[in-house]
Amino acid sequence: MLCNEIKRALRYFLTKAESGYELRDTTDTPHFYHVAMLKELHRVAKTGEIYTYHFTILRSIMEKTATFHGFSGLGEIIKREPDDEVGELHARYVNLLSHGNHSLFEPVDMMEENKRIFRKILNNLMNNYRFNPKLFP
Image (cartoon, rainbow, N blue to C red; front, side, top):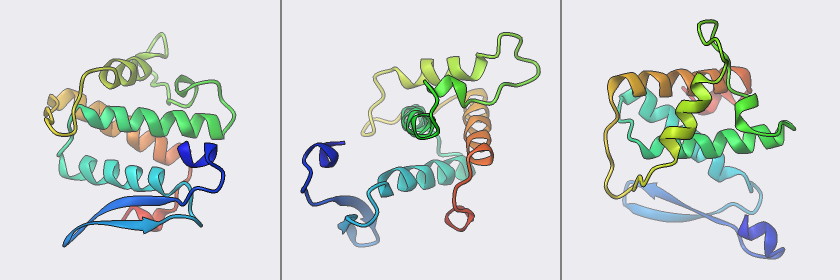
C-alpha cells in the first residue's frame, strides 16, 4: 500500500532463506507479498502448525481477493455451507479469530476444531478463486 502511495518507491519483499533473511526486488511483481502469504497459509494448513495469527493473514488475503473481484467484503466470497442456516458461520469465524491481539512473536496454537475450520475456509478460497497450482504442490 505504501509503495502505491509513493509512486516511485522501490519495492522489496523480505523473505526467509536458508541462511537467514533476504530482500527480494518485487518491482515486476507488486502482489508477490499476497502470493507468499498464501503459500505460507497453504504450508501451515498441511503441517498443522496453525496459530491464531494465521486467521489474520487469511482475512487480509480474503479482503484483497474480494476487492479484486469487485465484492464489497470478504463475507461475499466465503463459501456458504449447506448446514449453515444464516450463511455467516465461516465469516464469523474469520471476523472473530482475526480480531485479537495475536502476535507473530508469541504464537498461540489453535484448537483442533478451529484448525479444521481454517483449513476448510482456506481450501474453499483456493478452489473458488484460481491461483497458480504450480505454487501449491
